[in-house]
Length: 221
Image (tube, rainbow, N blue to C red):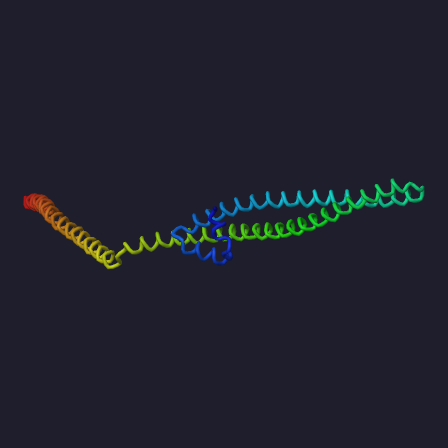
């Protein structure tokens, strides 16, 4: 017995409630859909068989009805011609046809009602299958959204803002230290360069003084 058949007496809303509580509602819905599709196919075969019976008894009823009308006409003709034995046989056959006609009519009407009831149930089953398919699409969207939200929450739960800020502060302090060291090395370079320039300038001054002394000596002569 399929899952849907075991829960056939439940309303659609109750079935949805069971699905909502399932560990995997999408898989549960797919299982319901498979079972309902099987029931639907079985119901369609049942309706087809019932309709076939309805048509069969309708045809038998109409056949006997036509025979009753024919025998009725023949009985009048037999009486009119004075053939009473023939009239008796026709009347007897007409009565047999009437019994069959009434029986077939009753069976036809019963099967007609049964077929109509099955058609209504089949339509209801198709409606429930359509509703459950729509429900599945909604569930899939909700499950996907929930999984995405869980991933985001898991990611955020592993994020420590205090640790991140402390790390950023350490990087800032390290940067300031590197900038200070660079500036200090620049100052040292400037000082070293000034000393070299000073010695160079001393050499230039000596040359100037030497040339000046020579000029003075020439003018003394």
